[in-house]
Length: 90
Image 1 (cartoon, helix red, strand yellow):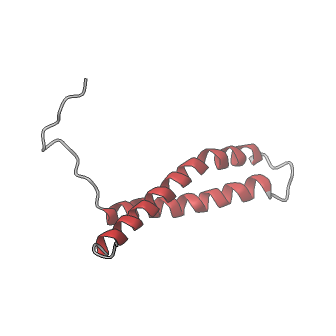
Image 2: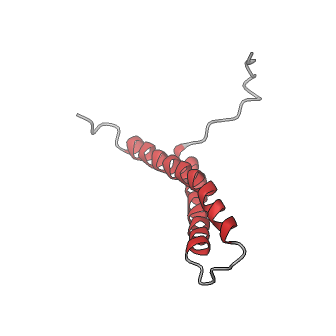
């Protein structure tokens, strides 16, 4: 059973700009990491490189996190755009 928390104990909701900044930065860092893992795992010049398996595994593991951050960033950007243009819907 979930108990209701008092207002002092509840965390405040992040604004769309804060979400965009948080997940946008994380998405860029994860994208750089993903590119490094793919390059290191599939396109390494030495076929006997000892970290190929690890790099491929990390590429598979970090891809869903990258997708989540991209979706959160896109959602925050759409929310910001909707807030700027409230009366333009037909």
